[in-house]
Length: 473
Image (cartoon, rainbow, N blue to C red; front, top):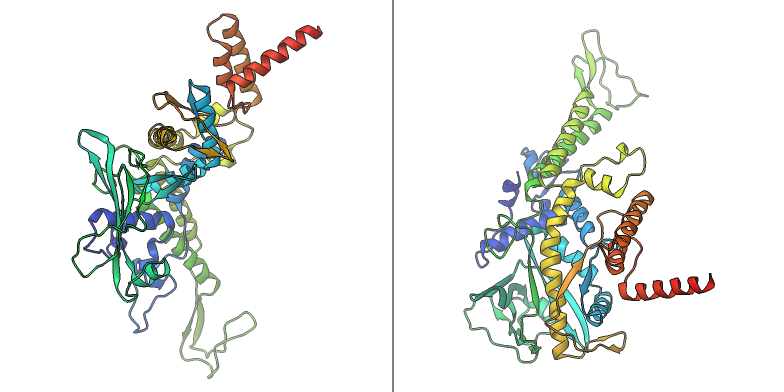
């Protein structure tokens, strides 16, 4: 069914096939897949009286299963309680990065990136404006990356090119534009500048001319964009620049669920107002008004009855939909746990076992969006500090050493219960007394549970409090 609907989505021959595939997957994610269908589900006949097949109608019930799984997995990545801390042996660098992360709202940016990148890939652009660091999520549908052949994970250039109406360009401030003509909008990024080009008409072949007015030279020495492939495995588009789509395996099942529920709803509406059958001859010529307060008078040989349907079909559809939902969630590692089955508060470990499929998905996403993308953005910030004086809330930050090692410290998947924290405390005390770990390592192990942001400051404060208590005793 998905392929049938995709066949109705127009393909522009001026774009590669990759663009069309990413467009169809984006429609599923945004709930716009059925926009290409012209008829509502209750439209059984066209204006000419022709029967409209169900597959040509928009379902009346929408169940965004794919979007739900994407949002559930992303919430385990970059929500307020799951966003990782950037760790560094140099505490000054760690503090500066923490300030920039908060000031640039990087957790919100990464949440958007992981959501929009679920179709296969996404890009995050970094800008330094007046000393402040800003990030912007870029859809990769119209982006083309070029990689360094001698360093395959390093970008040489990224080009953005798509069609736009002349009227829109005039609204955006471009001059000498015919509002009735479509133009190619193009810009690109390299290691030295963000290049803008003068829009050129689509129906004319012309060489791209750099727009010197809008072009900005950043001079960073690297392309300030991180290209993120969503998941390892088969590319969603067949292009190596894209990763696997998070929800592709569940799209057909989601469509089946929506149409089945729409049919079930149609049956319930019919049950509340069934068709009336009259068997002639009728007793007299009367206007037929259906309702409990009206009676039909028929002759001795006449008859009248309602064409009712049984209610077992609706129940069968619901059972079928539940089965389809289980299969779909299993195929894309969604959350299949039922809240009704939780009779008592569960420990963090029990919740992990219950949602193991979803955690498997989120764990893979931690690699691409965390260990690869987020660390790459952090290293960009460090390198940018060598070129510009970075500022946070009016405070100038010192340049950061680009050779300093960076890593991520991820919190637990689920909050710990009181019994979990008691077991952790007992274990850490035993390890500390035996000399197997240091106080710093012990604090790192419980930092996320007790909202400890600065390990060094916490150790100093703890030592001061301990010394004060000993002097009082």
